[in-house]
Image (cartoon, rainbow, N blue to C red; front, side, top):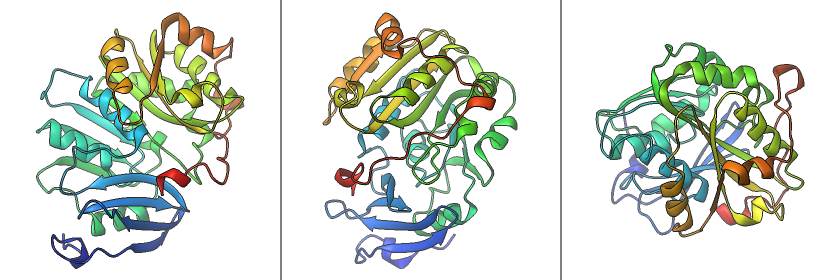
Length: 291
């Protein structure tokens, strides 16, 4: 696949943009990294990628997902990973760099976005990453039973998670696709009073016995809108190590699990397809610090 000249080492960094299914997709150069790029869709930051160092995760929520991927198996062991939501393929690049010979599937409904990212920020041809331009739930249904070591859901449409990816039926499909000791991680966004996030915890608890939640303390206290990473598994989660890693990040976060997480959910009820709604729309200034 041909590279765009401006992405080559030594070429002047220039922004790129293209209208895709989700609106205007923009790739903005990172002033501090020669081949670092931030992807925005419809004005909302989606992901950051450094082509020179795919093991570097810039956004706090991506770092937390990276910690989950690091802890999803013994260090260096190849994983089978399903990414629901493509963005700039940041987490797929991260896994491929840290766990060579991993087999990964990226499911991204926006075919025009896939083509734009592939052209401007090509994947390493040696990485075992298959990209499918279909709806996340449709793509997940095609994953064989018990195939995945890790399923990562990071799906947004207009900066909101679509309702059909927030239900017990959807999470039933996730559990079917996961290996017995596999891990599910979802990037969720919410703000005060955190009703959506609490409902997602209850929904995951209906399918998985082991849960953890990682987020900025201000988000957990309901003081601002932001990201939270919900982690679920049928097997024991490495909560202590995840807590240590999240707390030592440049933007330290907090991890809730066990009784503390149950108390945080506040008696929320699981959400089925019939009651599911999109995640809340972010306030206008929610992502100003990421641009």
